[in-house]
Amino acid sequence: MNEERRGPGLDFIRAIVEEDIRTNKWDGRVVTRFPPEPNGYLHIGHAKAISVDFGIAQEYGGVCHLRMDDTNPSTEEEEYVESITEDVRWLGYDWGEHLYYASDYFEQMYAWAVQLIKAEKAYVCDLSADEFRDYRGTVTQPGKESPYRNRSVEENLELFERMRAGEFDDGARTLRAKIDMASPNMLLRDPVMYRILKASHHRSGDKWCIYPTYDWAHGLEDSIEKVTHSLCSLEFEVHRPLYDWFLDQLGVYHPQQIEFARLNLTYTVLSKRKLIALVEEGHVHGWDDPRMPTISGLRRRGFTPESIRDFCRRIGLAKADGVNEVGQLEHCLREDLNKRAPRVMAVLRPLRVVIENYPEDLVEEMDAVNNPEDPGAGTRKVPFSRVLYIEQEDFMEDPPKKFYRLAPGREVRLRYGYFITCKDVVKDDDGNVVELRCTYDPETRGGDNPPDGRKVKATLHWVSAAHALEAEVRLYDHLFTKENPMVLEEGDDWRNYLNPNSLEVLGSCWVEPSLAGAVPGTQYQFERLGYFCVDPVSTPDRLVFNRTVTLRDTWARIQKQHRSK
RNA sequence: UGGGGCGUAGCCAAGUGGUAAGGCACCGGGUUUUGGUCCCGGCACCCGCAGGUUCGAAUCCUGCCGCCCCAACCA
Image (cartoon, rainbow, N blue to C red; front, top):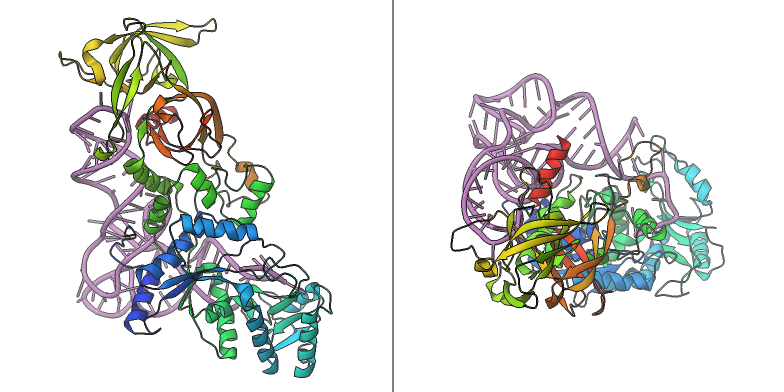
């Protein structure tokens, strides 16, 4: 994996890691970790974090742990653990033996909590959640100390033990750190370390009824695993003093936490809450809907792990939060697919073409190049006959300037076929163009220029009507019509910006016969249209393709410019 | 508002006292049997703003402005 090359100037985290290696701060070790909570599917934002965590470890000869941060049994499930491991592996990363679970550390965390109680740094508090909120104060006013703050060590020990034993109801008591109710940092106002939660855990079952909070657990997990560089997103910057406090009070191994800006993408949402809403409210057809920014959605859409990694590398790593353009992701995708996707011809919106001077029962096998970017990909045969389909948008009866495709009287090339000239237009009763009557020039076989040196301005793709396979093609567009659906006026809802045209299903498309038996997951370039991949629901009898991304389309841009003028 | 961060082109992002890398987008031109790819060229007299220090500042100092995060027994 050498595509993770870096340009001039290391990002600030790699600079720190290199400096630490140079000064031997961690005995030359580099240990990072990716710590997802198994309560949802991974998305492109996680891909950035994964490429940072695993990428840095890999580049500096270290290791990266995959750790399930499963401290809240009420939302976590085994299903998510499986999807997470699958997605990380698919992205191309390997944690070796280092798959861990926070829940495996519960006993150690409990012992450390007892240690803090004994040191008079933690206490059992009987305040309810509401009371807790009242006592905490606000961002501008200091909080009040809990009336239970000064219980004796013995009483705290006994109560904490009884909490563990299940003697109290959910929410009845908590274990809190005794820090400073007047701290300007809200997180330091005696944060909760344990809450009572009588719920079955996906791994530890009913062994526990008290669970550590994230703030208490997270730093300990990193410490237990001897992580050197604990990389996380910006919002945890204010938590760092808390983690430092716990680790220092305990006197245990102390990793260094470094925060960076998480990924945001235009025309989509990346918050777990909104992603869940999209699925549950039926705006998409599941977590792996090809419109979803989830790893599974991108995979089904036809993205390659290489293109996602390349994207993550190119957007850089810094502390300024911003929004990256999906266009950049799409660029990385096209660049990758251009090199590897075999070319085929497919007609999405067919227009019948009859070549009047072509023999009725003749079928010629034309040679077609599989991939002009890869000579090793070879060639294939494509049948040509008297009746063909071309794309409806490749013909205009009254073409505007700069439209140089087919029109009455005009000659174009059929790729790998022949030059044809449009002689007549057949319409139905409503005036719709339903068929083109054309002639071909036998001297242009294979699409070659004729001996007289005649040139044409356009080359069209086509399929032979009698040989083509019918297929369903699903066209996707951005899920949202608004560049940043998160930025809203007061009272507005992000759902108002769902793109009603994010999915268009074309039921009767025609693809060239070489696509018979195409295997789900395989990517192709449909010439002049875009990159498409075979959907998992596709069968030999009913081929189904997803449009991954269109090709860059200069003609579309010209039309758009004219329309906006 | 108290605290913690961040502000370099339309979007990302290097640069850490010596006179603004790179990518995407965009605009030209060339090649082309994909209006694709590829190639070539253009695109910040200026680094949130205002002062100051210095021979010299995006880089140092001061003040101001803007944006993000923290008031879940979520992570």
